[in-house]
Image (cartoon, rainbow, N blue to C red; front, side):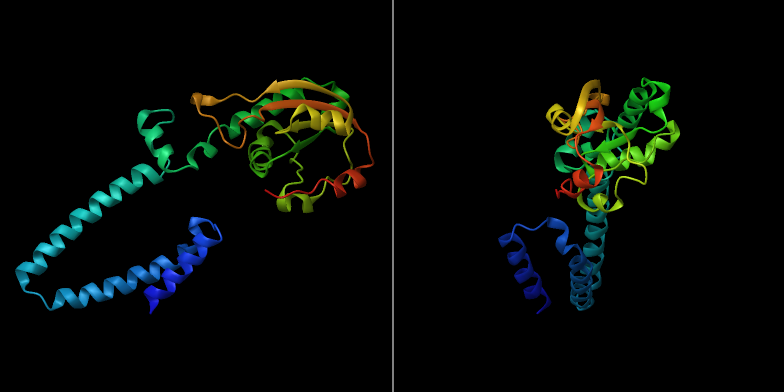
Length: 227
């Protein structure tokens, strides 16, 4: 019965194009049920058969564990052939690269501004990963937390004192030109180890923009989006 429940859930998941980890909570239950079944099966076998089965099982577990660790944990040297293979299997690895460099780039841009603008500048991030990178690594450079309209970031708002100067991260130039009176290119986020972070790829330019064309409440009310 348990197996059929899993199969039905899997078929529904595939039909609606759900994410593969949605069924993650079911696997411990399936593994426990399978272990109980095979324990009963093995108990009814002779001692030589049991010994051979246990020997094969431990070898399989060891090989599977090493293989899984090598391809699912970020332990390979970045950019190495091993890393390339692991990254091809685990599509999320490249998302771990480049965040400190992003924060450092934004910090350099902020440092290039006139003194009167540095303390009150705002940082607008297009992606929640970019916003998190500024929030996590930014304090080392005394950067303010990023503001973003993506997903639940929008609920945090833009602060009590809306900035007149903003640094945009993850946006194309047309975003700045459409929403600010003046916008200039300031920097490009580097790609360390030659690894392109999919969250930054194609959106690595950093711009400095001045004077929002609309009142901040109006801008913010239309700035919410989901990805």
